[in-house]
Amino acid sequence: MFKNAKQIEGTMHFLCPCGHVIRDQTDCLPYKARYVADQDYADLDRMTAEQIDNAYWDYHREMYQCQKCGRLFLEDQHSQQLLAFKPEDHDQVRALGSIRGREYKVSLEGNWYKMNETPGVLKWGDSGDLLGASERFDQWDDLQRRYFEIKDVLTRENRLRYAQLRGPSGLVDSLFVGQDE
Image 1 (cartoon, rainbow, N blue to C red):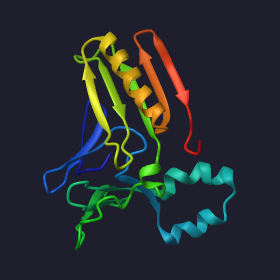
Image 2: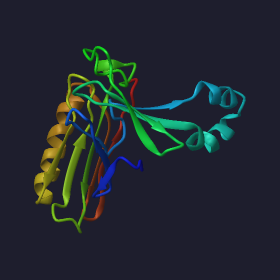
Image 3: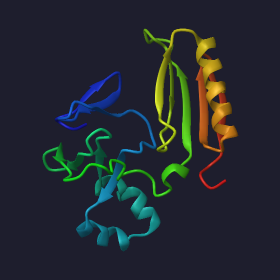
Image 4: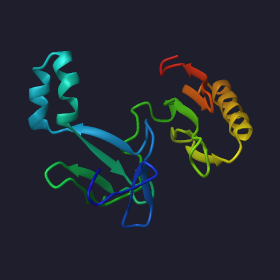
């Protein structure tokens, strides 16, 4: 967690100076990336796969890009803060997305949390033209119905990477398609 970020209900988020809220609440975000300093890359390049797996969290840092103004936020490991950089031209605000661009398949996750005030949460990713979203539900049946609606659309459009639905009694549905199918 960065000193200049907040955490509410288990999700890290921070406010860009332009007013846009940047959230880190799931995987495969199109505005988040991990990077390794060039000076450290040489060390990683000499390691075995097992050594890299063990050292990964020590060497990588995170960066985010505001989807509204294009500002980049880079993790500074020494101060544990995010450093902001404003682009000269922010027409390209998707600099951190997948190299697959609009062909990147998205994830779909539904979870039912018994103890929360609004226990149902449904999230799906963003691949450029298919905007990601998060919806909340008070009723399990509504969450389950919406999950299968979105799963059906993403499957028909060949846009689904993986889907998982957890209900009051555990795992209800799980599908991993992958990126290259």
